[in-house]
Length: 330
Image (cartoon, rainbow, N blue to C red; front, side, top):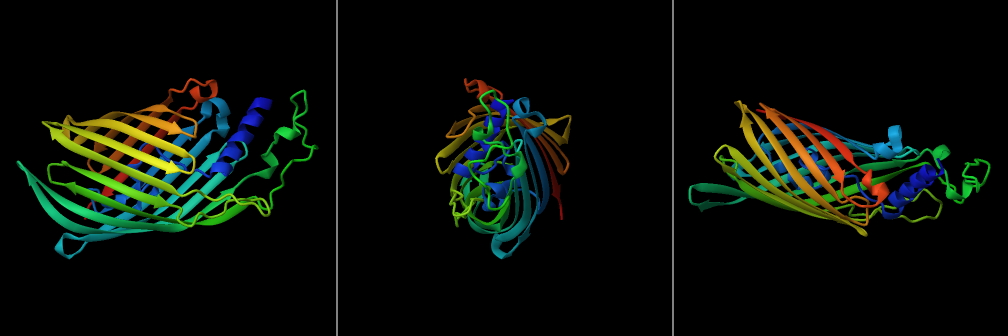
């Protein structure tokens, strides 16, 4: 029991020390979490999305990390091929046995400018440049009664609540502002061929997250670059994608490939893929397997992260993720 208590404290300290964000393996359903401009590149004018992620369950059981996300967004046509839109987003992440919880609510907006039409063989691509921004609030909360410090364990390994904690929290919750901006260049045509590349900068104000009097734990700014290219080969669609996220001392790089094909009916499409995530400064190099099912205006997403690190504790850091997207037509 002692090692689990120490492990949970270490995770909490790591979250506070490096102030990292929660991320999903499949990022596009709740695109504003990575880049507010990314909401613009989709096929339907209205969209509802929801996701759920569970991580560390082999080690923590019912106290495993649980992350949920939900969003609703819309876009509207303007003159000369331009359009604008926005949405609302909600995220919550609960980490470990101390119920360390992040709750975030934001609103976002974007404007897409039609830039040009390019021609290559039989293909015709319409190019857009999109600027997006997000504003909102994030609340951090911890159950202090469940916070066990290493200094409170006796030599025998028994936790002694009567022993003084080395640090006392001024408050068990804190509210901070969230400000993100992003750019996206994207091009596509009716044959679903095209590409996109985006840049985003999050946490522009670097708010102080410390719950200790006089403490200063800034929320590190996060820089992200992401992109994808996709094309059709007969009835098969190939999609290649990447993302690089840098936040403080941590970096995650994701490279992946997804293959989609119609299944029995044109309105039913099955997609599967593999991605590799390389992490620096956080636990978890991983291989990510994905499965997507599109039918009419609905998409169901599933993924499994298999950690490939050699460390004993990292080996158990797998994650299961599920998502749902509803695309609403005019």
